[in-house]
Every structure is written in C-alpha cells, then in structure tokens.
Length: 167
View 1: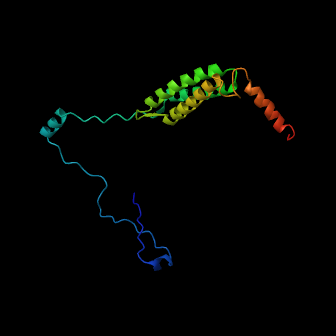
View 2 (view 1 turned 180 degrees about the vertical axis):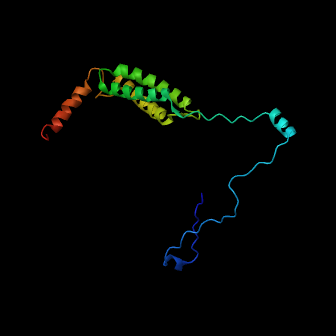
C-alpha cells in the first residue's frame, strides 16, 4: 500500500494559490519484505542451545485500595454520627476506626499499582475532624452539640421554618 506524501510549502505565495496535488512516494522497486540469509546447521545448533530471553511480565493493573475506600466511607459515617447528637459516642468510635483504616490506606497506596491515596487522605482529615468535634462535644465544650440534644430534629424544624413561606 502506498501512502501519499504532502509537499512542504516554503513560500507564502503558495498559500494564496490552489492546493498542490498529492505527490506519490517514490517506488524504487524495493519490497517491504526482506529475505533472511540461509542459516547453516552449526548456527542452527548454536541457536537451539542458547537460552531464549523471556519477555518481562506486564505490570499488574492499577486497582483502588479497599482499605483507603473503607476508611473514607467510615470517616463520612463517623462525621454524620458525631453531628447527629444522640449517637455522638458511636460516631467517635467509628471515626477512630476510620482514622486507623485511613492510615493503613495511605501505607497501602505506596505500591505502584495501588490507587486511592486521595481517598485515604480525605478519610484521614475527615476522621480527625470528627474526632475533634466529638471529643469537644463529649467534654461539654460545644453548647450546640451533645448527647442530650437532638440536632437533626432541631435542624429539620429550622429548615421547615425557613422554607415555610417559600413553597
């Protein structure tokens, strides 16, 4: 199969004129196939005794780290539990477990074919935030959040009050 070549335009006046036709490649009569020289019996015996190089195995497919993803999921769940109010203690526990899993996810993503470092870092930051808010709320430092307040129903009441006249 012949592939046409396109001439380069060297002057600016060619741009104003018609397009130049496609110039076919030169055909020197050479074939694209090459013939191998004949192999003698001694050369054939040498090539059989030499070890054949084995191609390297392909790199493993990139995969997401299950531990990093689980750490992110538990960090979100822990943050929501901490902000719920009555489930504050459980939220601190889930956030602590998410912190450990997120650290493990960061170490698991050090391998070349394991992805998910962003998941692990977001899970780590979110679980630390949930732990800080949860511990402050359990210590009584946050007046708006505690185990005796139901912030979800308070938030729902506030939302109903805000959008009561708009719909």
